[in-house]
Image 1 (cartoon, rainbow, N blue to C red):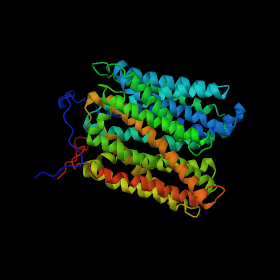
Image 2 (image 1 turned 45 degrees about the vertical axis):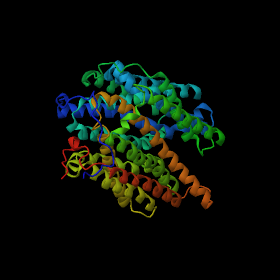
Image 3 (image 1 turned 120 degrees about the vertical axis):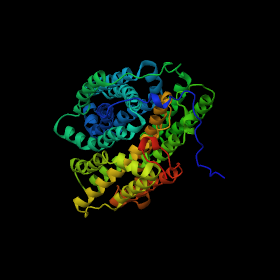
Image 4 (image 1 turned 90 degrees about the vertical axis):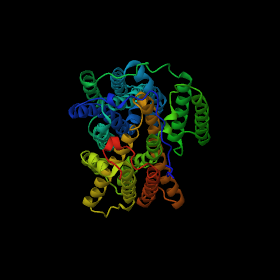
Amino acid sequence: MRASTPFPRPKPLPDALPPDLEPVISTGKMRLTAAIVGGALFMQNIDSTVIATGLPAMAKSFHADPLHMSVALTSYLISLSVFIPASGWAADHFGAKTVFRAAIFIFTIASVFCGLAPSLPILVAARILQGLGGAMMVPVGRLVLLRSVSKAQMVAAMSWLTIPAIIGPILGPPLGGFIVTYLNWRWVFDINVPIGIVGAVMVTLFISDVREADGGGRLDILGLLLSGFAMAALMAGFETVGRGIIPFPYTLAAFAAGLAACALYARHAAGHPHPVLDFSLMRIPTFASSVIAGSLFRIAVGAMPFLLPLMLQIGFGDSALKSGLTTFTAAAGALAMKPAAQPILRRFGFRTALVWNGILAAVFIALCAAFSPAWPSLLLNAVLLVGGFFRSLQFTAFNTIAYGDVPRPKMSAATSLYSTIQQLTLTLGIVIGAASLEVTESLRHHPHAEVSDFSLAFILVGLIAATAAPICARLPPNAGEALSGHHAA
C-alpha cells in the first residue's frame, strides 16, 4: 500500500515546456542577469527604508505635522500593492525586457519628482507614480531572471538576487541618517537616479526579451480592479491600525472592505480563464509551501528592520548612525551565505534545509530578545552575523523552490501572485512588531518602550517564524531535486 503524501502531486499542465527547451546560459551571464535584477531590487528596498529617516526633516520643510508624513510611506505601499497583480500580464503582453526597463525609468523619474516636490500633496502624487514603477520593476525583474536560467542554476541565481533584499533595509537607516544629518532630505530620493540610469543601460545591453506567444491574453480588468481595491484597503488597514492616524472605526472599515473585495475576487477568479491573480497555482505543492510557510517567515523578518533599530536607539541609547552600523552586520551574514547556498541544498535537499535552517533562523531572531546594553559588541554582532546567514539562506530556498515546479508559461502568473502575497506579509510583519510593542507597553504601564518590551516582541516574531518549519516538513523528500541536485535516499 502506497503511503499518501501530504500534498497531492500536481497534474501535468498541457502548456508545460519539455525539458529539452530549458534555457542555456553561461554562469557569467546568469550572475550578470541576477546582478542587474538585484540592482533594481536594491534600489526599491533601500528607497523604502531610507525615506523613513527623513520624514521629520520633510515635515519641517513642508510645515506639516510629522504624524501626517506617514502618508508618504503608505501612498507608495498602496500604489505598489494595487499594480503588482498586473505585472505578469504586462510582461507577457509588452515583453519582460521592455516592461522592466520602463519600470526602472518610471521609478527613477518619480524619484526626481519626489526630490523636487514643493508640498506634501505633490510628494504623495510622485510617490504613487513611484509605486507604479516599483510594482512592475521587481516582479518583472524576477520573471526575467527565472525565464533566463535553467532549473539547475536557479539556486545560484536566487542567491545573488536575495542579497540586495537583505542589504537594502539594513543599509537604509544609516544612509538616511547620514543624508539628513549632513546633506538635505531631498538627496534621499536623488540617490536613486544614478542607480536607475545604470540599471536601464544594463537592461538595454545585456537582458534578453522574453514574453509569452499569446501576448498574455486579455487583461482581466475586473479582477485587477477587485484585487487592487482589496490590496489597497488591506494595506491601508495595516498601515493605520493602532497608530492614531485615522479613527479606529475607519481602520476596521478598511479591513472589512478589503476582505469583502477578496471574497468577490475569489468568486470572480473561479470562473475566469486567465485571472490576474491565479490561485490555481496553489495546487502545486512546492509553490503552495513556499507561499504559506514563506509568508510566516517573512512576517517575522519584516519585523526585524523595525524592531532592531528602535531597540538599539530607544532601549540602548545608541545614535541612529551607530544602530544602523550595528544592524548592517546581518548583511555580512547574507553575503557569506551566497557561496554556501548551493552546497547546502545539494547536500541536504530543500525539505531538510527549510525545516532545520528555518528553526535556526527563528532561534536567532528570538535570541535578539536577550540583547542588553551590557552585551559586548562583539557578541551582539556575532549573533546578528550568524542570524543574517540563516535568514538569507531561508529566503533563497523559499524563493527558489517556489518556482521549481511552475511551468514556464505560468511563470508570469506565479511571480504576480507571489509578489503580491510577499508585499502583504512584509507589511504585516511591521504591523505585528509595532502592535506587540504597544500591547506590552500598555500592559506594563510603561510611558515608552523599554528593552524588556522589545524582548517580548522578538520572542513573538521568532515563534511566528518557527511555525513555518512544520509546513515545510510536509514537503516530499525529493522536492526541488532538479534545482538542488540532491537525490533523496
